[in-house]
Every structure is written in C-alpha cells, then in structure tokens.
Amino acid sequence: MRDRRSLPTWLDRYATLGRYGLVVGTALCLFALFTNPVPDPSFPWATLPSSLRLPVRQPRIEHWPVTYTLGIWLWVGSFPALFLAGYRRYRGTFGTTGWLVGLPTAAMLALTTYCRFFWPKPQPPTWNAPSYTFVCWLYCSSYEPIWSNAAYAVAGLGVVATAVAVRRFRGDVVALAAFGVLAFPLGLPALVAARRRRQRRRSAG
Image 1 (tube, rainbow, N blue to C red):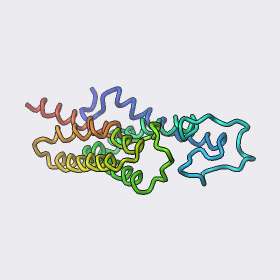
Image 2 (cartoon, rainbow, N blue to C red):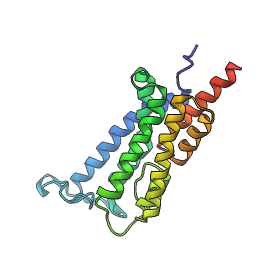
Image 3 (cartoon, one colour):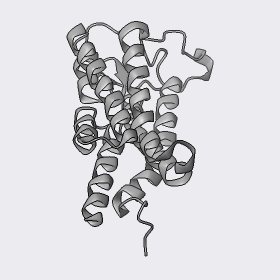
Image 4 (cartoon, one colour):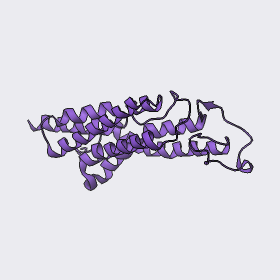
C-alpha cells in the first residue's frame, strides 16, 4: 500500500527523472563551450581558449547554440522536480507546504528579481527566452516591465498561499491551485499540494 503522502506514480517518476534532466541539461550547456566562442552573449566572459574548442560550430536558435538552448529548456522543465524530490525524501525538514509551495515561491521571487535587475539582457528580445514560468517568459521575451510586475504579483500570491496553507485557513486549496496554475511549470508542486489537501478533506468527511 502506498504511503498516503507519496506522489502519484507519474509524478514520482518525474521527480526522479527530473534530477537526471538537470544533469543532462548542464552537460548540454557546457558542451556549447567546446563549439562556440561565446555560447551565451549575456556572459561573454564564459568562453574557452580556441585551442580547447572543437573544429565545429553549432548553429544558433536566436541568441544561443542548439545544445545550450536544449540544456536551458531542459533545466526549465526539470527544475520543479527538485522540490518534489525534496518533499518525497526530506519532507520533515520544511514540511509539505514548505517543499511544495514555500520553496517554489522563494525561487520565483529570486529568479524574477535576477531577471529584472541583474540579468545582462541580450538584444533584441526573443521568443526563445528560457523562463521558469509562463508569466516570466512574457517578460524575458519582451523586457516589458509590466510582465515582471505581473511575475512579482504571482510570487506574492505564492507567499499568501503559503501562509494560508500553513494556517489551514478556508480557501487554502483555491490559493494553492491559483498559484500553481499562474506559476506553471514552476508551480507544479503547488498543484500537487492543492490536490493532496483536497483529497484529504474529502476522505475526512
């Protein structure tokens, strides 16, 4: 019999495979260093001497070489698995709400702040701008501040959802689900939290 706190089979598999996805994504990004002088124009200092590079050069998808693009998007798709894996193995450290909502919210706040104020933005903006949530993609693909403000608003909703869930206030399932949808794919763990809480209340009566 499965632990009632365990993940559904497909999410359990994703939590495991996602960690490998992060490793593969990192390898794909690093491989671009051996084919292109400057894989990421945001970081021109990240380059290797020509003597260490292979005698081939990758084509680019907008600003980034093919393997670099694949690696970054693999990171985007695999990143939520870290929180699910942490919840599965170390849930006693931060608790269910911490792993599934609090930490993803903190990550979104950090990433939104980095992209808004510190990321050296390549020009021109491009549709191929890797982003951990859809609303963040709207900003990273346009550099329009309104979308960054919207991302902060979604992260703020995550803070509220975390507090409501910890206090077990009425409406916590709605708050968790709303954050999960608006912060997707980073919000996937919050959707898991909403689903679990809803199921638990149904089984209780």
